[in-house]
Amino acid sequence: MVDLTLSINTDLAREILTGFIKSEVTRIGVSHAVVGLSGGLDSALSCVLAVEALGAENVLAVRMPYKASSKDSLDHAQLLIDQLGIQSKTIEITDMVEPLFKLHPDISKMRMGNIMARERMIVLFDQSEVFKGLVIGTSNKTEILLGYSTHYGDSASAMNPIGDLYKTQIRQLSRALNIPAPIIDKPPSADLWEGQTDEGELGFTYEEVDKLLYLLVDQRYSPQEAMEIGFDEKFVNSVTARIRRNQFKRMQPPIAKISNRTIGYDFLYLRDWGT
Image 1: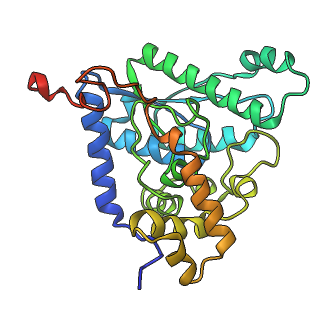
Image 2 (image 1 turned 135 degrees about the vertical axis):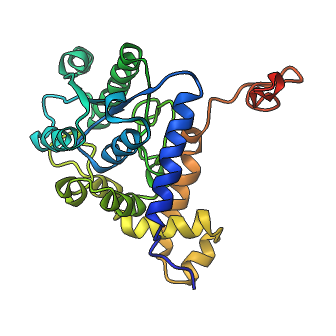
């Protein structure tokens, strides 16, 4: 029987992920990292791992509230900033996005959320130039598989240390790394509008979808096999459709092949120059 607790060796995961960050940052000749710290669990974990890998003095946390953002988000981010003793900036995005919102009086919440996510990534990459560091990603495996992110918004980064951890595993590792309890225990939310929660939007809990994703992706179960061991048919079909539909978000833009050495197809590594 497959173990659906998704339990991980947190000590080993910690060692692998901090080593990954240090290697990926330093291999291009820099020593700093920039993290968009939302007050949520995923960004908190990426930030803690970056600090362990590079040192507190080499990590910049950036808070980017909108006027409707929850005060708890700012406060929870500050809890971690104080705990880690890292440098931080608060850059409000309200005046950056409002002019675009005002052009479209009937703009939907979805469009507003996408605009805010992309504006925040503009801010982070700008700060990466100021701080001379790489932007660390904060999207977990569940979000990536479901496409629950903004393309070139919160899904963008120079590297992502937590992208192979399901949300369930993010919680496990976060507890082991002593992330403040208010961050771990609160309902996951992108804080795009008042009362917004991830699970409310998705229509299911992370705990139940992580089990299904683990079977479909890691254990290579077919949708039919997942149904045979008890998963609801409608739920399975909905999740598999989301995975297929959002494949484009998990890829670099495809390049039409003309030559015999095409970037992303035949030209993949720097090994040609002995690097």
